Amino acid sequence: MKIKILTGLIILTIHLTSNVLAGVTASSPSTSLAQVASSLSYSSSSNNNINPSQTNSQTSSIIDIAELKKNVSLAAADAGLKVDQAALDVLANSSGSDDLSIFAEIKDNVDTDIFSDDKQPTFDKNTIVYKDADWVTLTKVSGTSSITGQSYSSNNNFFKSNGVQQGKTETYVNLAKGEISAKIFTRVTRVNDNAYVENEYFTGVAGLTSFPTVGSVVRRIKSDGTDTYDNFQDSPNSIVNDATTIAAPHSSGVTRENQMDTYNNFSGAEDSVFVTAKAISTDGSTLSGTVAIEAGSCADSCTEAQFVATVERWEASTTLVAEEWDGK
Image 1 (tube, rainbow, N blue to C red):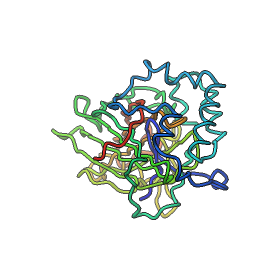
Image 2 (cartoon, rainbow, N blue to C red):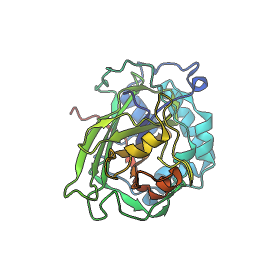
Image 3 (spheres, rainbow, N blue to C red):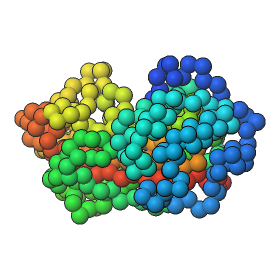
Image 4 (cartoon, one colour):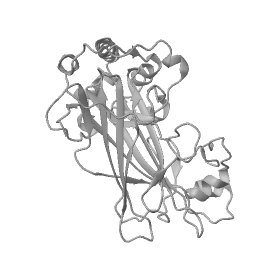
């Protein structure tokens, strides 16, 4: 499955509207990583997670609108990409580097149809990487998520409260080839399990179209650790649509009841976990992203609103600094 992917912080997740894709030009093959890195102030040092609260010097462009627009325009021109004005407006209107609500508002703009499903990412001197230095521990949401704006159950009926709930991401960008791809790693401990189940998912390769770059990934992780299609329409950032309904199912014969049975752990249910990740890179120098896991715990006879009230969410947000590919 081709990603609905992510980028920057990464967070990678991804689909693009046709009007954004129209007229997109390929990245200039003559642009070397060194040139782009120099113009964008890339860091080739060891890449560590950055606490968003400690990155004012790197993310202050979200507050300084003039500087933000200048950096994005220069980055897009250097990379042979367009400027996504709608995405830029979301960032410019945000309240600052700690405003996570932008992830629910900003739209994906990577092209998931430009490459074949079996396309592999190009790793060479032009490849830059954004990756978590280690596993990131997810935090349980009890109440309203600062990322989605939705409310979640404070109960621990699906995920074990003292178990391992973690995520990790790696995003690969090759400006010369116009490529972006990612790996999403999760560790999930269900309430009745004594150990976590680990999954690694490769998104496939999507096409870069513009700066800021925005991509999303959604996936269903089964109880045995394997993954498959999430069966939701588009790339929702949550199972929860509002206080009484879930996200719209995919149109191909999948019902809301099917989805409630899938992401549920009552006897006979599938016991699957919904994984969602999203990434934003304003100019390529850093990537900001989120990763989260969700599932519900409701009787087979429960209504949709009752199921929504049981959905539990664990999430994290990080900022990653671009580094040159190390050849591994």
